[in-house]
Structure formats: C-alpha cells, structure tokens
Image (tube, rainbow, N blue to C red; front, side, top):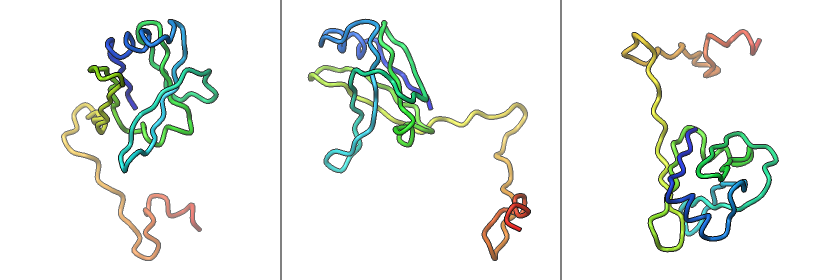
Length: 122
C-alpha cells in the first residue's frame, strides 16, 4: 500500500477549513457503480497506514484496508471543488538477481492445497 497526497490536495483541504494538525480519515465507497475515496476529519481508531502532507495527517483504518491494499493511491485536487484520486496496482519489487517470479508450489489435485503446506491439513 502506498498513499500519495499531493500538495494541491492538502492545500485545498486547508482552504476548506481543515486546520493544520488535523487527522484525515480516508475510505472507499461505491457510488453509481464506481468506487470513490471519501474523507473526514476524525481521530484514528485502528490506523494501518498514515502519511503526512503540509501539516495534515491522512490515514487508512484497518476496516478500509481492503480497498487500499496492493495499490498506489494518489489523491490530488484539480479544481471543481472536490478531490480526485488515481488507484493503480502497486508494482512488485524485484529481488536482486531474480528475473522471474518464483515457481508456484505443486498443487494436490484432490484438495487443491499446496504440497508445501499439505502437512497442516492432516
């Protein structure tokens, strides 16, 4: 999970009355068949990720990690009186000296379980 909040986004939020030092919760919500990211000022309960920009602390709660996990989310302001966001799959870091992904463990056709972990089912 990677969260990028642009300077434009944080400055616009401060212009709307959110003061420096505020904690801003981010969550995903389905609207009109698409996901959108919403925000509100509140204290975190179970934050799993926090990023600071221009005196504002943006965070994602444990319950909202499902949307943000494995993604790089960029929050920006481009006018129009609302924030915009872009969510893309987070790139997988290559390990030194490896050009290929590791081979998958063989599967047991009767249980579809990986033979590597088969001992846990017996």
